[in-house]
Image 1 (cartoon, rainbow over the protein chains, first blue to last red):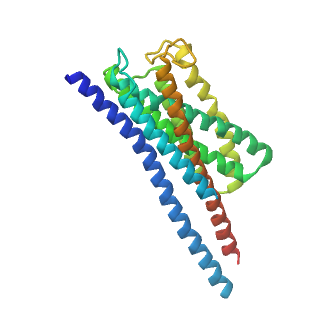
Image 2 (image 1 turned 90 degrees about the horizontal axis):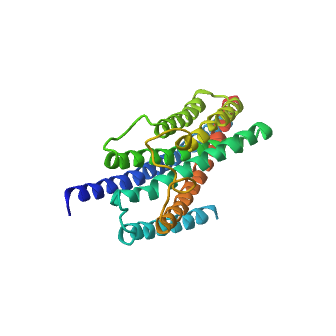
Image 3 (image 1 turned 30 degrees about the vertical axis):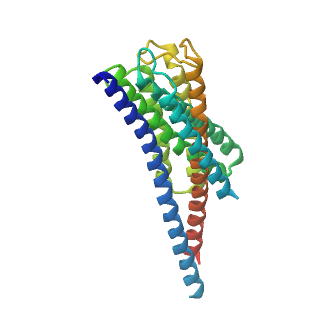
Amino acid sequence: MNDALQRNFTYLAYGLITAWAILVVYALTLAARGRSLARQLDNVKRMMEDRGKN
Amino acid sequence: MRKHLLLTAGIIAALLLARNIWVMLTQLPDEAFQGAIFRIIFFHVPAAFTCFLCFLASLIAGLAYLKTRSLNIDAFSVSVIEVGLAFGAVNLITGMIWARIIWGIWWTWDWRLTSMLICWLLYAGYLVLRRAIEEPTERAKMSAVMSILNFSVVPFVFFSIKWFRTQHPQPVLFGDGKMDSGYRAMLYGNWVPLLLVAAILISIRYVQEKQQREIDALRREAHMI
């Protein structure tokens, strides 16, 4: 395989990897946000229970 | 039920993508002038279509919000814009990688590239605007107006390669450019799993936005007790 052809394939690989990396990073951001929301919900519920008791 | 539906859609998308990548790498021939790098079009163009479809959905959602004042529509709008931005980023970056090989440069201030970048930045500005406004109905109203105004750039991005002399190739699907039927089938075939991925991400984000609003309402209620 000559250099130009090799380079062509290398950049194609970069393209495909980057495309999926962006979507995977976004999906991971969503997962982190989901965990944070669950934590926030627990905190608010606890806060309401505490205030209700007092 | 919703989780099962999302899981099924995810499995279908993954299988389709695996099949498409296999076919595009092993069975589709290299393009005569561009070689292997041409295959990047099978992600670059469907990503752009998905991005524009999301922005179109945000335009409709913006108009619907102003008519109905439903905060669920606002939640849908922010979801489609966020996912649209992710696909817009895929479009821009895969385009840059293609340009590095074919044009020998990563970027040029060409009409299409520049207008797409501006469009992406405008929609990113929408997300910044949302963070700046605390009051939910005011935020929803301003966001709806901004999503409607932002969409005015999308037709400009789409038609810029027809209206101006640009370095960007002519459209291969709805224009003067030509494309082999095998390539065309792969292009549309790869759009399906990308649309499924977008739908899954939008659905997850939509639920999160509604949850966030409920948490904010509970917080306000807790402060009032």
